[in-house]
Amino acid sequence: MSSELDLSPRDHGAEPSGGPRRSIRNKVIGGIVALALAFVLYQGLTNARVFFLNVDEAIEQRDDLGERTFRMQGTVVSQETDSVDGPLLFTVAYNDATAQIRHVGPEPSDLFDLGEPVVVEGHWAGDVFESDQIIVKHDESYVEDNPARLDYELDAQ
Image (cartoon, rainbow, N blue to C red; front, side, top):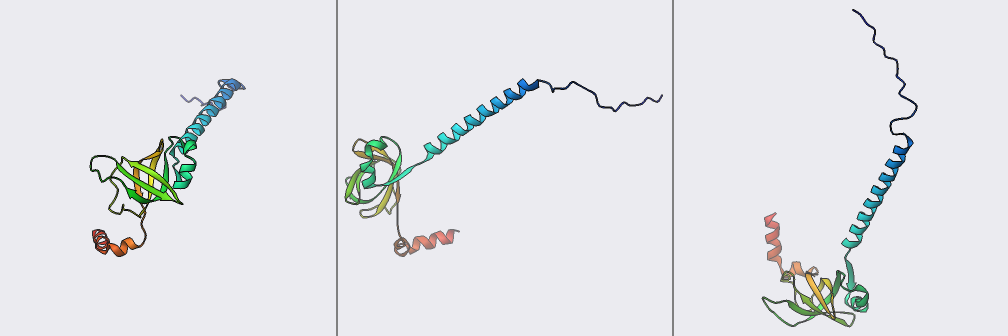
């Protein structure tokens, strides 16, 4: 019983299943998905951005900034309280402008002191800047002043 196998192509009609309407619908859906992804990406990038301003610039732009989170740079010129349980209150200055800071975040490092440059992250609440993060800037004198700490870190590696 030998039967031959027919391998000739079959004609299923001139148009693929669904026709041109399906092609247009797929393009519209793809366009909507692309726009949605672009919108989500734009929102993520603009909301993740944190501004960095000097004290004088932040005071000048206070009304425009509103309650938006940004970083402010200045030098600690006074510290009103050493409260263990309450917020840390201090003043920073830059270019003859001063700002009152109310810090409610984690305790700053041992480098936090009068005369030290800091960057605080937070937002304006009226005339007071409410901070939830303090970054203490330091220069090479840290290595000179703390050689034991540096040796300890190198030994740990």
